[in-house]
Image (cartoon, each protein chain N blue to C red):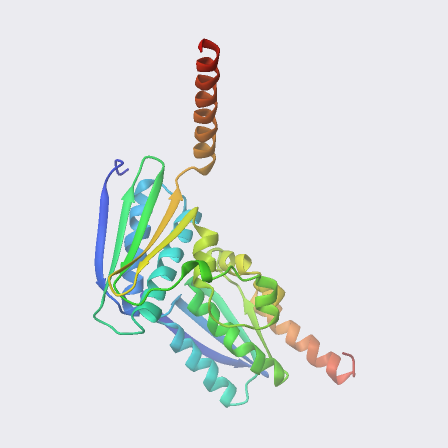
Length: 125
Length: 168
C-alpha cells in the first residue's frame, strides 16, 4: 500500500475520518482537502481514526494544527482515536495531548462528544 | 549485518512523491545495521524532514532538482548526509520551539528541524547557497555503550596522563 487513503462516515452529529497509509508532505494536501470539505459542509465535530495510519511527518501534524482553531471557534473539535504506536510516539514527542483528545478507541471519542452534547443540553459547561 | 565503512547513496529528484522511497532507503539500511524499530522510526522521520525542507524551502517546490542522501555506516553509528544545491539558511537562527507555547498559540509549521534535533544524536548544517547545502545527522547504534566507551577511553587517557606526570 502506498500513499494515503481517506474515508469518512457520519455517526450521529460526528464525522469520523479514517486515514490509511502515510501522512507526509506528499499526502498531507489530500487530508487537508477532506477536512476543508467537511468544514464547508458545517461538520465541525470530527474524530480522526488513525488505526491504519502507519507514518506521520510534520507536514501531517501541520494539517491537524491548521484546522483546530477554526473548528473550535465553531464549537467543534478534532479528536484523535486509535493511533498506532509509531504515530503516537510522534504526538507524544510534540506534546499533542495538551491540545487534542487522544483516545484509545473510536467509541471513546464518540462518547466524549455525546457527553459534551448532553452537558450542553443540561446547561452545564 | 552490514560491515562498517560501507557507504550507500541515493540521488533523487526533489519531489514529495519520492519521500516514501527515501524513507524506505534509509530505514532499510538502518534495519540491516541492526537498529531497533524505535530508532529506525526516528531516523526515517528525521531524514524525511530534512528532505521535505530541501523540496519546500531550498528548492521552493521546484521539481527536477537533485537531493542527495548518503548513508555511511561506522562501527557504532549511522551517518546520514542530505545535500542540495538550493537556497541555504542559517541553521542557528532556527531555534527550538517551546512546544507548550507552540501548541498554545496554535502555530503551524516549523517543526521539521525541532524533530531532527530531538530525534537524532547529532545534527549539523553547512551551507554554501546555490553551491551545496548539507545536513549531517548521526544516530548511534548503542548510545549507552558509546558513552561507556567514551568514559573508559577518557579514564585510559587520564591514567596515561597521570602516569606520564609521575615519570616526569
